[in-house]
Length: 194
Ligand SMILES: [Zn+2]
Image (cartoon, rainbow, N blue to C red):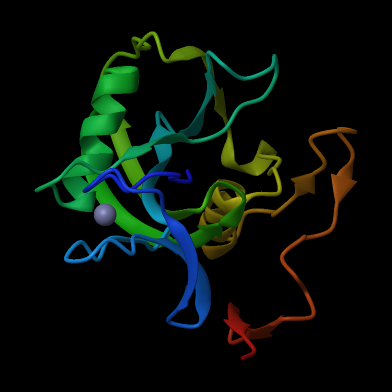
């Protein structure tokens, strides 16, 4: 998302160095708008339903491309209630328990993923946003290389299940793609080397 005109006063925005980066900013006197373009938080759910993990295919996605249920947080909503609401809206499932898995980058879309494990029950009925779903046993899970996939990987790893990544283009198994030079495994968890 990039603005050409100021959403506050309508003047054309200019590119200025601010807080260490080039930003689109308004130079009209008394306005002061700056488009900081910070990442937007997105909620993602690793849904456990009848001892399986639920993956969904968005109606806009290609055939066979499945991932987690995701959604944006609403104003005045806690992330835990937000992920339960999204799950209800998109699958009709009820949330029994929510726990944080972790927070993951999704730089390609300028988003930050907040991933929860959600234990769910009820009867599945998909919203129009989703085209289909599948239920996968944790031991059979193959993981895509992106922010929400890393959440699945961490959840599986914490429970002793195999962590197997695959390439979405070729369908072949690939090694854990998480920047192995930047990370080191300390006491069973990935540590970022700054
Ligand atoms: Zn302005």
